[in-house]
Length: 176
Image 1 (cartoon, rainbow, N blue to C red):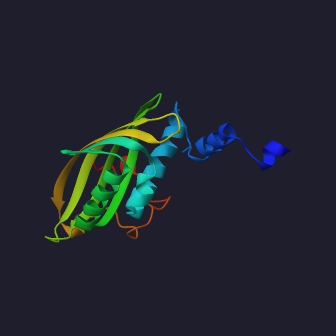
Image 2 (image 1 turned 180 degrees about the vertical axis):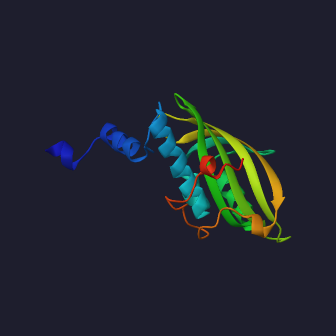
Image 3 (image 1 turned 135 degrees about the horizontal axis):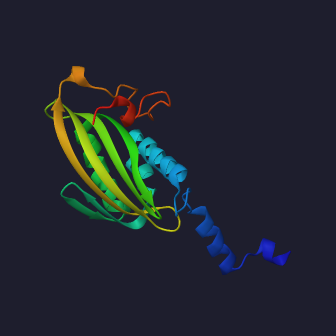
């Protein structure tokens, strides 16, 4: 009973490790990868940099377009600037491939540039590597923006919220 009231350092390390797990954990099967992708999409649609950063290892390596970042602090700063510029941001991610601890994703998002007020649809691909605890340790993103008319927008659910379950994914929209 003494160890229950006064846990040793090994027990405390195990508790900390378990509390930091981010299921589903690798290696991923198709269903787990689909869940991981949807969880990422939902987090990004909140536009909350702190919340989004918690899905990454503290020393995560990022390439986003032509930017190279490392660590959660850099990720938070980057996302704060990104979402200050990209208003009315709405994102859809879709699983492209999965193997072991790696997931490949295709995505699209729409936003209004806060300075020019022009609308854009961004098309991209991401490669994700995950640590054993389910946190992403590497993210590489290639993204291209295409100017669109406001009337051409497809992603119309309320801003800052996750995509509704009945809203079509990219495969259903057939617009890639």
